[in-house]
Amino acid sequence: MSRPLPAFPCNKDAEGLMMFVIQSELPLLQGKGALMYPTQTWYVRRIILEYKDGILMTSNQRNKIDNFMVILPARENAIYRDIAEYAVELGYAPLIEKNTHDKIIALVFSKKKLNKRLLKIHPPGIYSNEVEFKMQFYAASEYSDFIHEKLCMDVNAGRAVCKEKNKKCASKYTFSYPDGEKGFRCAIHSLVKLSPLSAEHINEIKELMKIQDEFWIEQSYAK
Image (cartoon, rainbow, N blue to C red; front, side, top):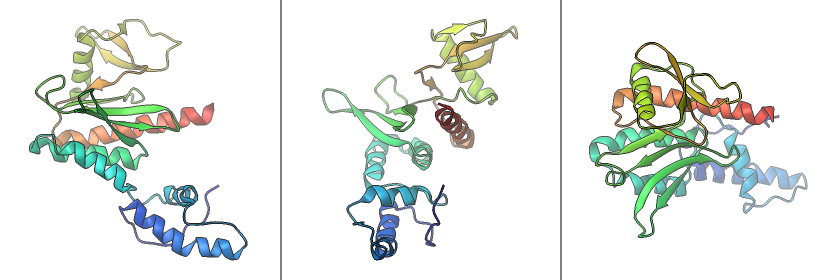
């Protein structure tokens, strides 16, 4: 059960929120005999994560996103930054992947408590000359023609697919062949390439992210 939250203004700096709680909440707890110190940030973070109206981002997360975005073309920076920041808002932590030569090859967003990876962004020059964006969204039952086309392109690239619904598999994408027949693409541990993206696709991408996240959360509660 969520505890009553202190009244403070929305702040995009999670560390600023943390300091507020340290200064306002911990003295009250100490007065009740609780042994709480500013170094026990796990407690403070738990309080902050219950504050639903703010976009919570630590300086470390911000630095990872900034360090990745500077290597993207300027015309696409704002698009992928918007998506990246929303992933953090949903609780997914950014991780920069590098190759053996210390070159950045991807920015990945995962949620440790769910053991799930939501999306991955590759800079130009890794797999093609364009930014490559991949994500999971199989929990969504409906999506635009743009997303459906990307899914079909992914299937045509040789991904695992079958024409009969596998009742044992709960992780799959549904698409239609040109003749109208339904197909089912395996989604386990797999991200679908959706790039290139434009600003008009951002809202749908965010909605798919939210649907997938809520699905995984419900799954975790059912276990």
